[in-house]
Length: 250
Figure (cartoon, one colour):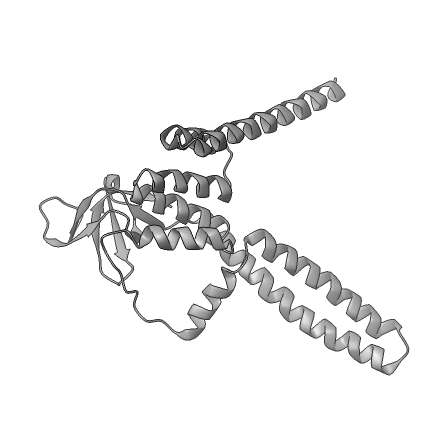
């Protein structure tokens, strides 16, 4: 009975994979036929059925860009970038889409090492960093074994110095992988989807109007505990309250 149950589970998983692949092929075909509305709906369906992948978000972003739905294009390019920040095509298309938004933001200056670390962690995906970290750790252990059991002095020096370098690489790679994983799990950024949003001083329609923000802008969510409202911070540093219905979490 257990064997039959296990076989049934395997068959079910294989059928789901085949269905997912077939659905993506259909969506790709619609895109190639320039049926962008239908293709977008098809990609949305694949993503809804646990088919989350950077490529799918990227293709969906392309559909919305072709349809001139720039906020949705930015949203999906950002989601693709979150999963695979090292992809050059995703970076380029995201920059292109953001260039078509109304609000041109100049982010506040930050410490050089913060920028350096962010650029470093974003040069590869979380899986690539994890693979590098594990590989470097295994090679480090081999270096230690060379130092312990090989006789020639130059070989032992090579083993110990190589192990030290590989240890640094393993630590950096694992920290980068953890940093990206945290960013993917605890999503605290959103894209404004409403054409124009009036940012308030407090979570109430009667509160003071602070400024306007337009569709496609990226915000950091500071507080989402108030029903129907969330406090956000914009890339240039300003902050305030907006209705939750005006933005969607990346």
